[in-house]
Amino acid sequence: MNKKKMFKEAYAPPEPLHKEEFLRHAPIQPVSTTAFILSQIRYIRKWVWGLDIILLCLSLIGTFFFRWKILYELSAMMPLLALTMITESGRSEYYNMAEFEQSARFSLKSVVLARLGILGIMNVFLFLCFTLVSNVSMDISLIRTGIYLLCPYLITVFLCLWISRRFHAEEVFYLCIGVTVMVCLGVLMLHNFAIAVYGGEYFVWWLGAALLSGIGAAKECVRIIKQMEEFVWN
Image 1 (cartoon, rainbow, N blue to C red):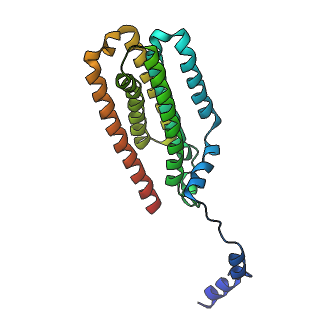
Image 2: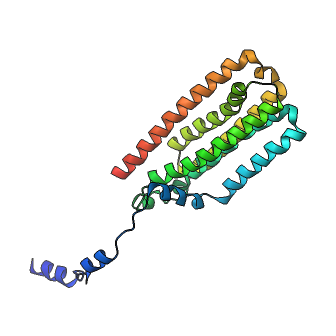
Image 3: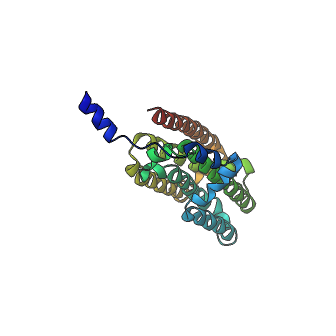
């Protein structure tokens, strides 16, 4: 016991000097929710913003050169917007920084939700632009135009979230790219080989697919958030 006590005393860390004084004069500056969300804009990778700008420019150019099929082209581009959201939400796991960020001032869940909110607003803006451009270029109702664009997007989001919850971070990135490419090609194939499915009699199937995909994506989001909370608890 004496030796144990001697070792403890020999290797005991020194008492911190002026600790209370330092804590009094170095308070943590409060950060509002709005300021925190805006601060996350600069952490979103530049290629994401670049892709959004390119897609917006292509939609505007397409109204002059591909007017009669602009809806189908934009519908095939919508999965790319879904891919940007999924890749940004999984960056911490991909770079093995999730555990470290859990101990930061703002939790990983808060950071992910903030970035998803920013990208979600941008995607809604692009979706509205695509819908208006397609509706002006083609003689289809606004609701049908929106569903034709929204359906591939929601399918991609649901499948990528399902993958993100079941596979390791290193695999998720490439699997999500594969799913996105498959959905894009699927939409292009529908346009080239089964254009009749865009007829009014098939609209109910598009609507059903969009609703089911949206519900599935929402459930996967809730499950992923619960996984994050369980990780923090552990």
